[in-house]
Image 1 (cartoon, rainbow, N blue to C red):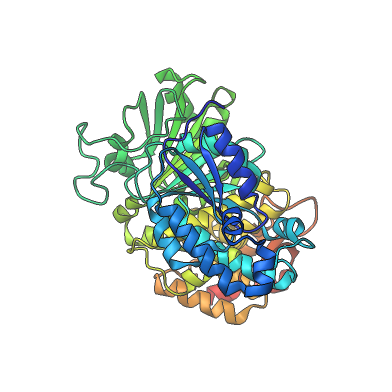
Image 2 (image 1 turned 90 degrees about the vertical axis):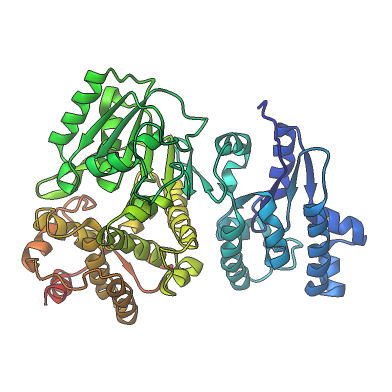
Length: 530
């Protein structure tokens, strides 16, 4: 592959993720030395790990593992190396602290694959399926905490490409390596990506403002699509643009007429298939510009630069693009994966409170789908004013990218991401895309979905979370009969059957493809309008 590693990196991940194999492969490709912590422990203690567990117990093994790991992490090396830690090494707070000085790659593996690889072998902690799954969930939170780069275990061979894409990334930024059948791309999430001064009155003023981060792996002249507000704040932060197309803000810009206007402006400006279209803004800009990128000259490269919460946690990832028709949302579109996503969390400081709150509905939705540590963080009142909220945003993006990796074209699992959206989209279309922001409609849709799920206690808890952010839990502006009728136009409807809903009995257990009786749907919508 011809790449060279200029600094040491550390691989973390659950048992069965293939860290040892990946470390050897990456070290060979990157001209580095591979070091495996488990083998180091066995060599120094003169016994196998199963034997250490059996004779001394897990606590003794963890003590030796921590001691040797800290030595390796603190040792000055003459050359670059790839260090593979054991699956449980990150359980040590001292190790997690030491990892702050290193480039950490999380090799992510799902629990089923890990179990299939480990069950029946010699691993002491892979003998009971239930305990194994609980351990996987516990460690998931720790890996998410320490990782600078997240790569799916199936893409371990892409380590050199991922490291090349990570060059120049500001400190404190996480990079998720998004994968799909159509292609892989880096998603950068964190502060400072759009340059210094974000969130201040001086942000984006004048051509002298220093440009922000741009992936070295994305080339071509840049053509920007943004709305008027975002353009004033951040237009200069992307570096030189060949041309900028400005659209009116709001959902009504997601139309065929507006797409045609963008196509015409790009053609006038001389954009070619060797150039890149940059979507700078929220979900409307991302969807519209993405659709234009998918269709202009039959497809040009796209970079998403989301500046709203709803876009940073959801809509900028996964390749769904589209525009609305008057009676139905997102009815015309295409799948078109970006070449990169650049999500500067500092940009959230410039959002109006109502817009920030609207994005929070997508945070709650994603946390409900994910369950585990992400739900616990959100239900505990994670505050978007704190630096820790970057972890929530990255967790939401990672949840979506995990799902998209296994179902890019929305044929099955990806439909769980529609939780709350069937009723939410119907509310938007029946009110002319003017009465509610997308996130506000999703908030209402979530409450309807949880009522249909019979999850009354969870619905009450979610309602409290939404109310705390001043999101609507009642919808006086809707016509319940019109909303129920509009759900029949949902684009996920197949043939003459009913509309498939996503139901959820408890966090982490979404169930797509559920047909609900119309009388129950009507009752859930009437409750919102009461």
